[in-house]
Image (tube, rainbow, N blue to C red; front, side, top):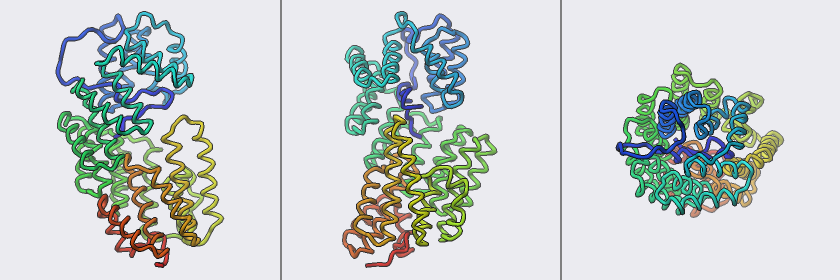
Length: 454
């Protein structure tokens, strides 16, 4: 499971906390007069490091109850409260924004001042505060972690790798750096390195769910489905409410041709307490992978007004419905789905999330490429599919699988255009990533869209 920011505005990466494996004497790092509040806050830090967000939320809340003036606890609690109660979270943020910072530690003062700069969209000030803090405190892993995560968020992957490696040199207990390095390597398609980092992470904290989940994501992208299932199940065994692993396991089952298995996972997740909305997303995925697997294009198109399609204009159900419309020559419906995706792009343009903008643009390019290929404009279709590929990475399970399918559709388009050598070169590259998906593609005679060979 990735550890990004709870929101782009709040900008607290999980990597801004660490796991202490070896006890060592240290001065108090956080400003509170209550030992009980400090203990709760540090328990929250520990839970956040494990990606146990619900527990972190509870601990931060108790810390704030015990000491209402505990400013860093108020800040952290507000970040965990944002989705549940944005109004109350905003009230707490306003208190943090106007608070006197003079009694805080240098680290606390830096964290809150930088947050204020980000909130006010003073990006240069935020960068200056971070770089000045690291210059003054070069061995503070918190500052280094912020620097590394900033590089990652900007796509500076080599620099992010260097910084996370340096972070581990400074503080070997900062084990989430292994997780970051594993995902950065996945993004760069350095799968052997990624596996090494994730296995190091698992070796150091085998009793935490997240290292097993991260390995499972990698194994899913690589088509190593048995190992992926074992990893996800181990994460769930360790923490039965680790929802990410249920989600990733259901995604893996659906895309490996086992929609009934995906539904069984969803039922287990619901029984364990997963939110209905999260489960509904997975149920849509299982349903539409099954319909697409049966080439039930007419049924898919007849159900284009279903909740699954309406839920997300660039979600899996919408992408499959668009494909069905193209297979059946219903260009009006196909273009309507593309228009809705364009509308979503306008919404996310102002969200502050580069990740969201890139994902929507990738989906739009893919949808356009599919329609153009089915309409016989192979050259422009190839351009749009390549544009989608450039925006997609292997960072997340669903994105990695989408990237592979987009590439296979590009192969089919190249074959339809008579560009066999280029098609088979690309096919070999995809096979090197996920052999089972390519084997399934070959069994279909390279026909996801049903294009005729050139």
